[in-house]
Length: 212
Image (cartoon, rainbow, N blue to C red; front, top):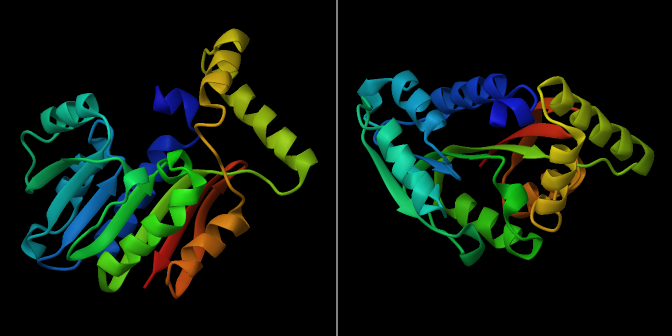
């Protein structure tokens, strides 16, 4: 479903794995916040150098998704622990060298995003990194409308009907709340990160890398 709905989904997963393997430190933890079915965690387990003895943590608010993640990781070459948590309620990480949030921050209520990112920053070790891939919006209304239409056409090209697209948009209204690139970057910097940059952008989707 995600591959049909999210442009360059597999490419973005590969980019996230690239950043994680780059910044994962020995004897630390790597967190996937909003781990869904665990596909990214499995790729991380298969890609991060085993000699680093990294521990993986998958966090999600859905028990059903966590159960699917456990199945995905049942033969993982790296230890992985799963945590049920609502990121709106606050979440603390420990001994982390990398935290990944793929299409997750957009579902956290805006009033809770600041504290969540501060918690992440405080839980990252020196030299740690945060990887965020998000649906975004343009600060220019005319362009934002065009970005949305491009995304809808992307879905149509992959078999979604106009009715399905409309229903999905209605279901996500006031649930998925995207911000602009600038708003996301300001939020990340406000949390304490010294460096933040874009590593990916496709119309109304963007990837951010932040270093502490």
